[in-house]
Image (cartoon, rainbow, N blue to C red; front, top):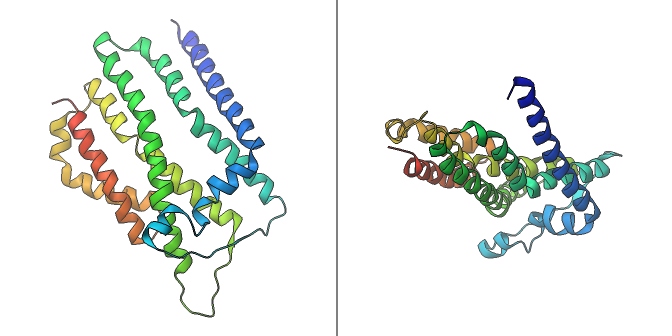
Length: 239
């Protein structure tokens, strides 16, 4: 194939992936009450599973100070959740694009890494949604510098921490998939990862600090599964 033929195939991959996101986004947009009442605002409910399990009380309400904020949040969350729902199909499209460039011995592990990466993405989302986000919210919403200061949380502020925490954990959990692909292509080996294990620990703490809010508790909680992901990557990597 010529360079322009490759661009044409890439264009088709991008268009089909974008259409799948758009399709799911439209469906999500139509179920506003369920999506926001049950999913997006779920971690604000005092009966959320983590608060009940750890007996952590939470009392919070949101306000909106921007005329267009509620509609724009509805649009953005529909697209974001549309991307999350279409992620397996996007992985399939990426695989179909890169597969012709791989040797036969490379196709099997790379294909497996794409399948595993889709699963790990959702595991990361669940970790962010059910563990990191509620604990971070409880820490920040119950922390105060003085009793005269009352927390009044805006819709934009909550949506920002919701998206950054949950989606970031999903993306970070793709690390083993990346390692398997690089290992299959002969770019990285298990001995290299073991050699730089101490450096990896520092990197894990830095990444945990970046993908979670600034409180130490959520950072440390996020660091545990990230370190386990690194160890899993070491096991999956070629010798």
